[in-house]
Length: 150
Image (cartoon, rainbow, N blue to C red; front, side, top):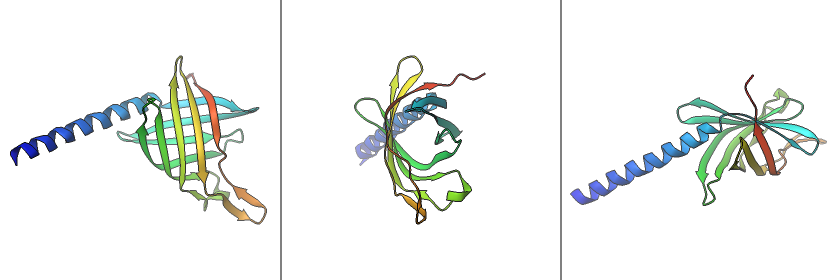
């Protein structure tokens, strides 16, 4: 019984250490990242709210934000960050009833303050009226550069 408790204690310490390392790496992403999708500029913001909490936002050329509020973060064998979206919304009051409940953001770290970002399958599409819908399109392999603080 004593050996089992020692093993469980050791596993808990290792898990906590891994989680802290992941949070430290996500903290390095904090800030505003800029790039273009076609001809349109886009920003991706990572804001650290508290010790273990972040907000991820996409801001389009019309200054409308797509805000990820609930998520899980993991890493894969390529050392990419995988953000599994559980709840997201659009900042516009017009679309306040639109809650998005799935999707994945994949972030690959590149040299010289660049990241490669993918956003996949954010859904569902939100119907406002018969001819007005809101959705967040997939984003494939865009390169973003960290915005310099002035």
